[in-house]
Image (cartoon, rainbow, N blue to C red):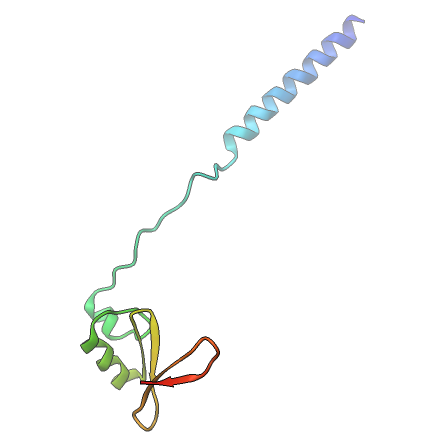
Length: 96
């Protein structure tokens, strides 16, 4: 009888230690790795048409150079006839 009680006690102690070991080394969902915000300088914006900009002059410059530019969250394209358009949600060209 005594051996059964000692065995149960040891098993319970092992489970408690295992619980605390797992809890200690388990990654918390609150912990997030943050890299900060991306703040490109003017030169990076000038040579990358996929970076969003609010600068109208830079937008026009990138349209002339790359035939596409992202302005205020929307990507604009320049056709071979020098017409500026963007694609709607349905994939239809909307000319400006």
